[in-house]
Length: 151
Image (cartoon, rainbow, N blue to C red; front, side, top):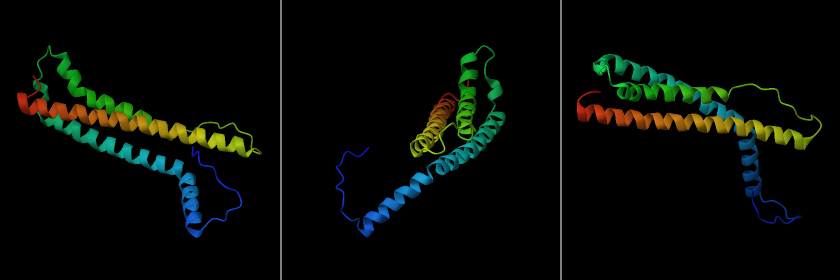
């Protein structure tokens, strides 16, 4: 929170009112923007998962030596990471029963913050796992290019 002392009785300038209005709008749209970002992450995960699956199907990945469990796990790990990311992105849309006192502004504010924080935390986890998967894919591509294949 802001630790500034706000003096009472000073009229807001039009610029101050503009910025206060912008922050009210951002607060009102906080949940909606997190949900939109989650939708975009879900679409991106679906797209990159399909591309990765096609690349694996046509790349000769079947040439992994039978005893090389590590190679199989390594090349399958982006898919697992995308599934975990998808799990967290879908949790952003999970409906719950919200218990708050309808006549209490403090209760309504606390519930709004709980909902917003839940959605934001799940979006951040989803984003984290997507980023980790990209690192794994990049390492896999470098390994593939350097070693000439998964084996």
